[in-house]
Length: 358
Image (cartoon, rainbow, N blue to C red; front, side, top):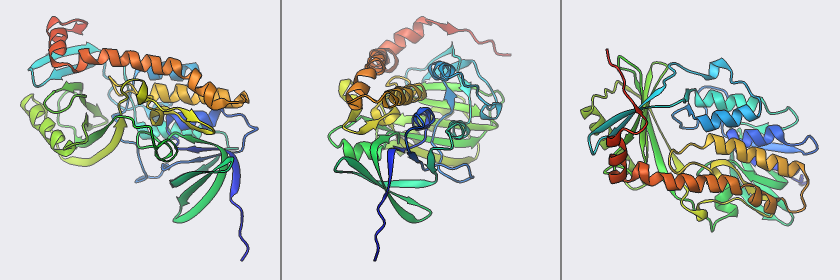
C-alpha cells in the first residue's frame, strides 16, 4: 500500500476568532498557511458564547487597521447607560459607557471574510492533536467525518480559553478559568437595557444582561464549582430586582480565562505560539478579550513577517505591553470585586449618572 506524506505548511493556525483571523489576514504571502476552525456560516454551526458588546478598547484596535464595521454586524438597541447592581448589598447606580451592541457570530465571520484566498481555511473542523515531530509540528484534525494530518513549521493556538494547543504543547502552564453560563430569553422588558451585576455570594467575578434584537440575554462568569446552581441563584436574585424572564430559548456555556499575576500568561516556545485568550490575554476585571486578540494577532504577524531568527523570544518581548496592561487591570479588580470597596465607590456615586424615568 502506498502511503501519502502529510501536506506540509509553513504556518498552521488553530482557531479563527478575532486573534486567529487577524493573524491569517496579515501574514505575508510568502507563507503557505492553513487555518483550522470550528465555525462556519451555516445556521446551527458552532458559535462562540458571548454577550456581544464591543468595548472602546476593541473599537480602538479595529480603528488601527482602518476597518469599517458592516451595519449587519450591529444589532438593536445601542445602549449608552449601564445599570450596575450589587444585589447582595442592595445598591444600584447607572454609568455611561460607549459599548457597541453587535452579533458576535456575524462579527467573527466578517473577520474571516477578510482573510486572503491564498490562506487555506478548514471550516467546521475539529483539531484533535498537535505534537512536535522533529523540526515540525504534526496536526491531526477531523473534517466532514474524515481524519486529516498535516505538518507545519509554526503552529499557533488561537483557540480560546480551552486551548488544545496550550494543553498539549504547554502542559505546565495553568491559567485560572471560570465557567461562563449564558441564557437567551424572549424580551419582556418594556425598555431595553444593559446591566452589570455583582453578588459576592454567587461569584467573585461579575454577571451581565443585554437586550439584543428582541431577545434578553443573561450571563455570568462563575467559579467552576456548582456553576449551574450559581446561575439559578442569580436569576432568583434578579427577579427580586424587577427582572423578568420570558421563555428560555437556548443555554450556552464555555470556559473563560481570568489571568492572575505573571503566571497567568503563556506566550511561546520554539515554533509554537499562543495568541488571544489562549495566551491568557483577557481582562481579569471586565473579561474583555477582543482588543487583546486583535493586538496579539497583529503583533505575531509582524514578527513572523520579519523573519526573526528567534521569533518566540521576540514575541515574548513584544507582548510585554499587553501583559503589563493586564496586570494593571488586576490592580483595578479589588475596587470592582471587593464588596466593601465596591460599596464605598457605589455609595459615593463617583462617575455615576442620574437616569430620568418617565
